Length: 82
Image 1 (spheres, rainbow, N blue to C red):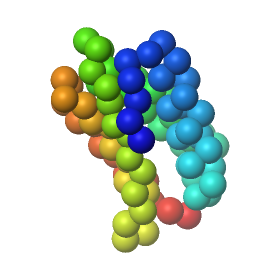
Image 2: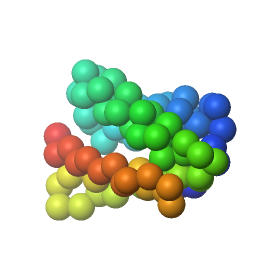
Image 3: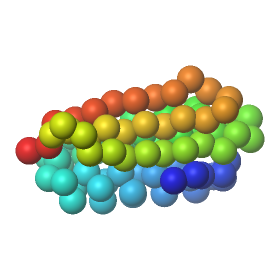
Image 4: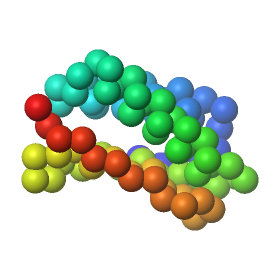
């Protein structure tokens, strides 16, 4: 998913992360923590008018999440599926 540098991008990503993580069965406490970290990563990636990209991938029993942009270091994390 590509996101422009918009004030509501952080909210969109936090909501999307909560929905995806909840769908795959991640614990509520972990959802809140990962959603906040993703939101911060999007804010950092989009700083300076750079669009950022958010990707969710299932691989080998874990959910891999990435936030990338042309103007910031990439952010990655993974969580095991329950």
